[in-house]
Length: 128
Image (cartoon, rainbow, N blue to C red; front, side):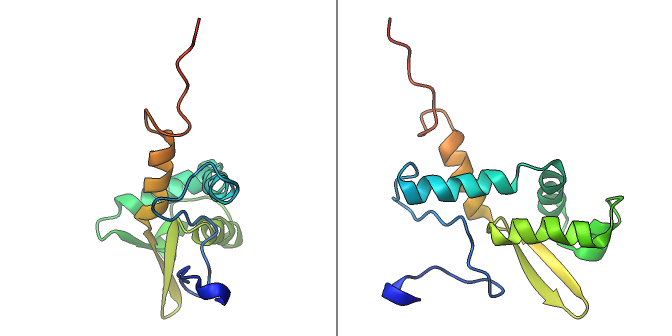
């Protein structure tokens, strides 16, 4: 990448939500990256997908197994997974004809950092 950037690519996709350690999550870049993370999880199906992948015994789930859990066309399920992969929340590995998905823990850690008590999105103490 130009300028010596070290943004990691996975499966040819540059994660949209990349906050580096020490980066201010409320500057323009950090806030936009955080918003993309929250937007990727703003759909109940995507929240369920992350939970299913995260709770799978091997820490990864095959598309074929995920498809069995949802009453929707495979193209719709693929769309939801694509959004999660593009946001960097899931990674995808192709094995034969199937895709396998894993949860990437860094984006979830960023969200936790933003939301935890004392974090940058905390409610300020009221001053009377």
